[in-house]
Length: 281
Image (cartoon, rainbow, N blue to C red; front, side):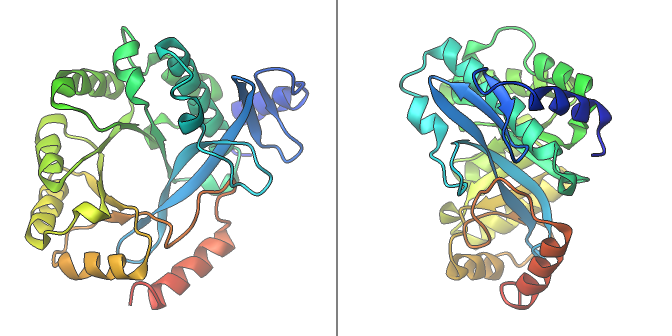
């Protein structure tokens, strides 16, 4: 373990009973309890569009299952929880993901994408991100590798998004956004200046708009992530449409399903070689 403060904290959790709200199981995986549900983390790789190299992971909150195929905890609890309870759940998930990611040595030098639930934007008053920054400082974890992903917004939420993004940025975090279209992605790049922005691959159906967005993002040092790539046809269409030297990232079920463990270094190398010859030819 390359984070001594984190190791000390995990050691204390190891002896914690499963009757509490946070504990470690027999595999060393952090679990939490919320509304009588046991939840934990699953991670999906985010890769370079050039060669398939893993550059980051996105964390998802899941109900615990031995095969890593637990249910989406937010879909289970969103309608049951009020705003205050949703804020509590959001913070618990963020802590779980941090513990489950950084306890694995394969996380070194990789980025961690953590989603911020839409209810948190309006429900939290004051300095967004300060409490989480303090947790990372206590555990001596690299906050500069954490990207906080803000949700899609309605037009009336524009000022909220700007306010929250600036607060997170002042606390040292990088900012990720979701866009509902290529046009909205371009607008968000100008207004918010995020470090990353996600575009659903099904919306990326205008080759010229894709190229303009990638070039704009490249100038702004922002990563464009094309997500929900579920088959080879979509990947090939993306590659053929992006006749530009500007880099981009990719994510989807074509490459892997969310799971508890990160790729080992050996698995990572094998995956890059396979994808370089098959998917990225």
